[in-house]
Image (cartoon, rainbow, N blue to C red; front, side, top):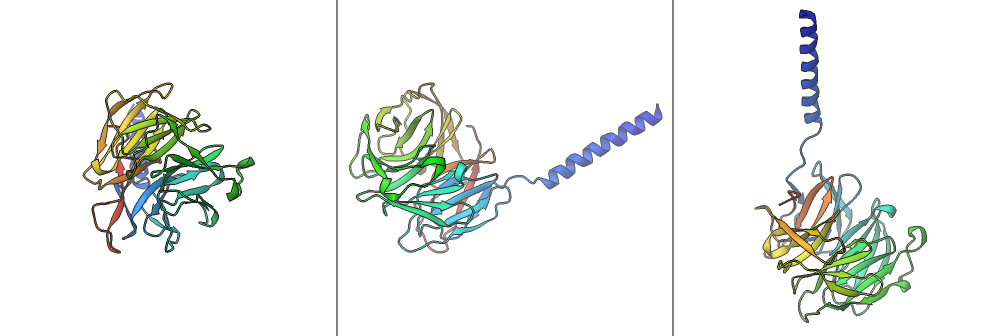
Length: 308
């Protein structure tokens, strides 16, 4: 009996030591990830594993980091006259897509090397804000025009020629407000696009071929100041920039309605523009629009709870 008890104690001690060693080997994710000073971020997206990407409004540069360690470096160097607003990662092709804001460009990069693969230009575009990659195309919102910029994706994920890029007019319930930010964040699910209207506080369900938009019923809730969108299953996260919060909605079966579950906020938020799920955790990037940008201004990514 004594021998059996001794063996049990040894096994228990071994298990405890293993758990302690595992905890030491796998440190907690940081609550804050610092970006380079003066970065001026706007877009953020998940990459493979624990990788995260963030673009720069200042010069179009792209930063690549690891959310487990908080370490990162510049993947794409910035250039004068270049802007990076929305960012999305194409998993199947390991590509990054960047919306170029007032430049009217959408750029595609190799997410591993940072090589520029193609540039698509949309003459007459107002402000290409956010984008989403689907199996068939890349869709970018234009906050100053009632259209979506569309780039078809070729067979086996091949990049198409810039001449094949088109513009899709938004119709139906789309109510354009001149001089204000209109269509902003965009995601794709169940064969539809979902777009947030910053000016009107509405969510729209958009047909990706016709551009016909239908207002999603929010049961009295609003998405005013809505910026970036993030989707996880049937849950939609709406980043409301100047309110320093992320509203969480449960989408209805036909995307005709959505129920507000609550809001996520943090004292570490300073005008977040969008968010991304990386390694099962929610990360919001802080644009700090009310802080005058200088080369020394601090910018960071904040880890948030995944539910209200």
